[in-house]
Length: 76
Figure 1 (tube, one colour):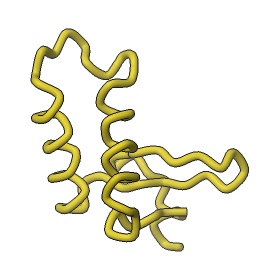
Figure 2 (cartoon, rainbow, N blue to C red):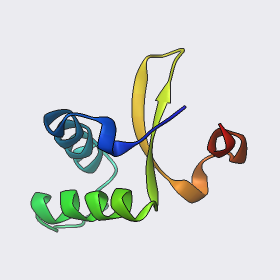
Figure 3 (cartoon, rainbow, N blue to C red):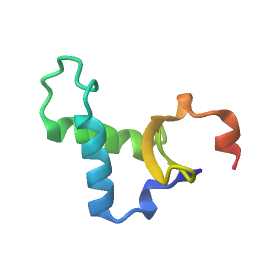
Figure 4 (cartoon, rainbow, N blue to C red):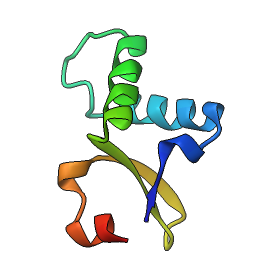
């Protein structure tokens, strides 16, 4: 299920984005400041290039690029 980023409380969205950009394996040697990485994700969400996916079975959210989301999830 996709969750519009505009429905999340600002603090919740901040924590979700920060968790995503600081997750092990996401920096790949990139020394870009945290604030810049967070803003890139915000921009991708605003532009519809990234989405928030909620997995009901695991009760977890994750950020994904829209192009990587299964088509049937986008149709819901």
